Image (cartoon, rainbow, N blue to C red; front, side):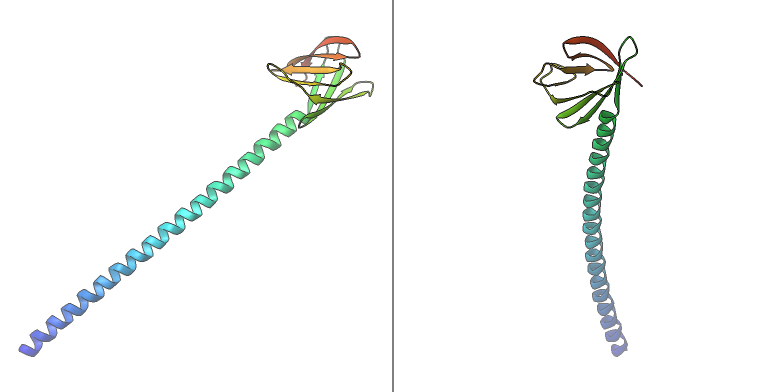
Length: 139
């Protein structure tokens, strides 16, 4: 009987020791998994942010490069914008190379000869070869 009792006690101690070891292994595995999930989430967040920023810039570029304006008498002008530089194109094929210039609001591009375009919210004013006229964005 003493042998059986002793064996039962030893077996119980062995099971407790194994159980504690298993609990520690599970805790370690869970901690590692949590860290991997955090790293993956951080990397994914950075990738999504970068992709979103690129998409916003592409949309801005596409919108800016596709600007078309029309005067009250129907004459159309195109404006291709590339950062701080713009090319104003007239219906008869003339091109005016302009640079971004100071503006209280909206966007303004001008050259050293006094040619300029200043627009905001779908309308603007242009001065080309000394003539000033209003423009509306063509949608």
